[in-house]
Image 1 (cartoon, one colour):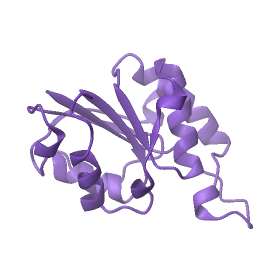
Image 2 (image 1 turned 60 degrees about the vertical axis):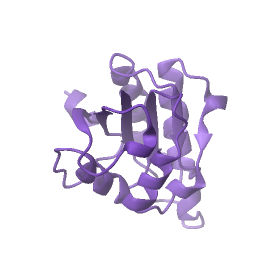
Image 3 (image 1 turned 120 degrees about the vertical axis):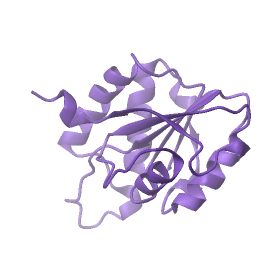
Image 4 (image 1 turned 90 degrees about the vertical axis):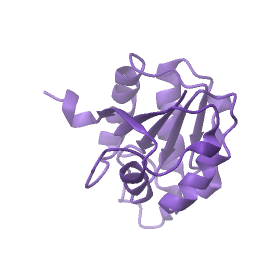
Amino acid sequence: MKKLYLMRHAKSDWNGYYVSDFERTLNKRGLHDAPMMGDVLKEKISPDLIVASPAVRAKMTAETVAEKLGYQKENIRLEKGIYEASASDLTEIVHHLPDDAKEVLLVGHNPALTDLINRLGNVLLDNLPTAALVGFSFDTDSWKDVEPGSGTYLFFEYPKKYKH
């Protein structure tokens, strides 16, 4: 059994006129939502591996969530292929995950994450919100067997669900 958690980075800052898309940081809302979601997720997931886009906003999100989960930040694997990926690219990244990792948290970007979520299991999502996460399980011992439609939907967590 494998479990894959697909998380979009928290809300990023668009105010820096001289900052590239890759270098955008989290804004005030993102700095609030990432740790909040980490608190929510620590009751639900226990990843053996966290893989993240090296884009600053995704890396910041992954590090914040990792801290809440008790996962060592230095063990986060930055995967440049996640940045500007398609759903097919993300599938290839999943296929190359180490089989000794039973639960993997992948932190990345839209639209690829939404597309991948819609391909993997019985879910139809218009848009994965910032700092949101969808979980799937797969009845397999190898990440290479993760294919469209092979996932069992576990949950969908998003910040607005916890804001009162």
